[in-house]
Figure: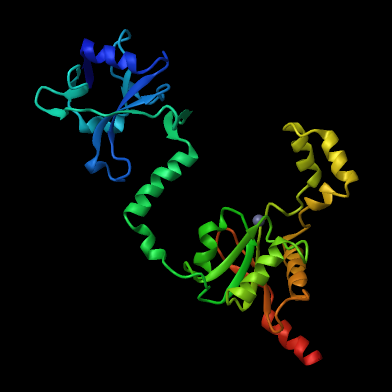
Length: 316
Ligand code: ZN
């Protein structure tokens, strides 16, 4: 594929950018639509090309590149012209006109040309926003519509481990709207009057949840987590060591605050203990403790909340 840039077009492209690093990328822009079938030709103004992109132009001209996967949309010999009267770019081949008013989109601010695997990638936020537009437009949300009350009347405290993001709901047969799910590092309740316990109580009192599930997992990053290492890397990344001393004098023990648990089994037990002994827990609330396998999704019951309730009722 080759592109011939007429001199009015070359002049116009050069005048559009004041930076010598600017490159133009010929794309078949399907953004916002999600399918490559109904895209439109466009020129993206970028800071520099990605390694995979192929340079279409001679060294003296403004640089125009394209991605190999867009090649199928164009013929081999293209001409880019600029009409100074209508002030528009025209992209054509010998047999067809691709665009009489080819859009030039300045993507220098929203694209970060990262040479990751040689591909230009969008920055995370931009990538998410681009996807989101399509998601909303195509009404993909409809399959998730529900209300704020958990259908299965349960609240789950589990770990933020990324392996569990989809696995845990699937393994428990939970769909959108079935359960309140609270996540943190290690599925830990540290303080009876902290943030996690507050969320659990809100779910139980205000949102119709009736049972609590604490679900830790094997191979949890909080197992044996060395608080000392976190403090060290904080200092390495530029946190003033003096600040840590100041916090210590103010009664904040970072090493205690940041510590994990010796094993996940004990971590779950301890969290369950704090929840079921909480003075504000609605009487008769079952609090279960489980472990999930982060690969297979297999659940092991550590504490069966029903049995514990039955035992304590017998005792009293
Ligand atoms: Zn974890």
